[in-house]
Image (tube, rainbow, N blue to C red; front, side, top):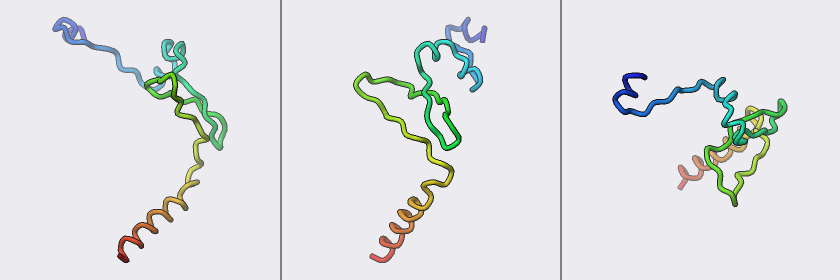
Length: 85
């Protein structure tokens, strides 16, 4: 990193995920959100941007396989209708 800095190339330390969750500036700026999951609340890193008049809205994270029947129905339904035309 010293050689890069001497050459005028911007450098920065890369965090691992454990470091991200301990990052003081991210905490101070409120960049973490809590979402509901079937197993209880879970803290996630928020979107990398903020728009004052817009909020993405947060819903419960689906359980593993919760949407499988709907996905299969849509996939099979599309495949069947497109192959029969």
